[in-house]
Image 1 (cartoon, rainbow over the protein chains, first blue to last red):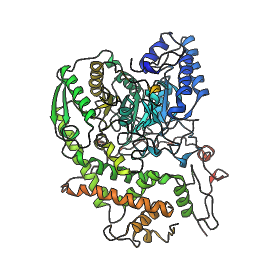
Image 2 (spheres, rainbow over the protein chains, first blue to last red):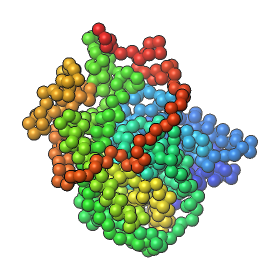
Image 3 (cartoon, rainbow over the protein chains, first blue to last red):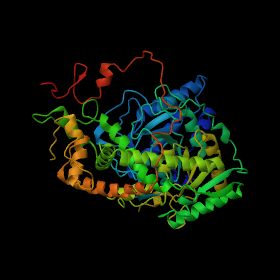
Image 4 (tube, one colour):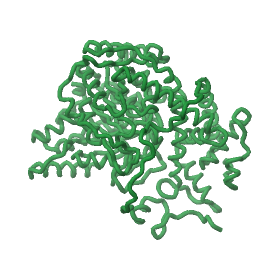
Length: 506
Length: 116
């Protein structure tokens, strides 16, 4: 099994979302034992991984005991009853501190649950804690967390990816069955690829953002990090669907994707497009990653898929367009951190004004990458530069969107690498923001186009044995097809022989 | 410290700032930091100015894309403007809304004196 290497003496083996839910519903294991085992694993691995910013021991055990009591009383159990899950620190959980990885919000506790959290609770899930992330989800390595980076469970000298690096590391190490992240330009899929787990970003509008810290509202989407595609479908089905508290959430009905994945189907009649810009003509794509992706394409073809080359001529401009759009939106969204209503407030100097309170509070509270992006976005929106920067980026975004729309007329999904490289050593790009931005080259376009996308582990890198992620991008609001294709690939790939994480850090 | 002066909206919008080709890196950073209400230490301003120059040079590649007659795409939604029923619902209430604020008094947020 994928994670057998991470076993802890005396503790039950790590189980996924679906497996755990079934075992608890069948009475094979008690929810309180599952929660206690998850907390014991956190105790064993958290010191090395720093995947969490907050662990809610008491709340998790109490929630699990309620599930056991309900089961004893013969009450109906939710589809995720007793499943321990973690929540990225961008997402509000009432009663748990929320920092979004920033000193700006240190010590703040939100008064309400995000809609996605309320839905997980309603489904019976046990919330174990808040996962580490880059500050305000701005980063691709977790090194922008104000509280120190998460480390990669497969090699703790390497990054976990970002921004949902804590969620990916926790999921890979079996600290809970899976969890929620947010994906603005790849922040669920890229860390999933680097940590060897499944990262799923649904269509923009499919999942409510009410109660989620806003970074770039036209791009942000809540997604899942799990150890299998079926687990992704189970969490997704629990959180998806329209929400009166989020006007951007979409009213289209949500298929029960979890029920759809009970058996792996072959891929006969499925047309998969490989963007030449993501493989054949991709600059900076690691040779070992390329090899594993090409092998994965062969596997898909063996399963009956019609694998063909397509072209997305404008995606090479995706990074530039993305980093203008997301920073422009961030500069507006992050205006709310003003030292008045919540978060860090600077000490008032004599003669302080409201303006100087804003400026000093923000100067003290935000870290360097957040300042960099707010300044870039402010510039892109400023008088005299709006048309040349922000508007131009939105026009290029339209062309990227139209490239995908054209390709997805003739293909059921697109497929290629998630990240051009495997997890890199901590610190390798920490002082070069542009090099870090280029790590998102294959993921940002799905956000620009608003499309659902998923990263699933391919075979590990031939030289380093580090995880490699295979990315699928599907049609808007057709998550069901995307999950079916990824599920078929996962079954064809078979279990991966991953290295034991504990053996790699010495 | 970069001086933080906010004389008027007009001075912010039409301040002593020129096009990027003419403006110095330091002027550009000082201008946008003022607009964004972020106080920067001098060494921080120098670092961020250097980074912004590099990033803006990179995004120049967008100029090569022919976008004549291309409608800007602001988001991926296809439903136009969404309205909800104008019905009353409970808010947080003053106590809960101010519970996480750094300075409060009598259920209100405390700020420096705004009106003289």
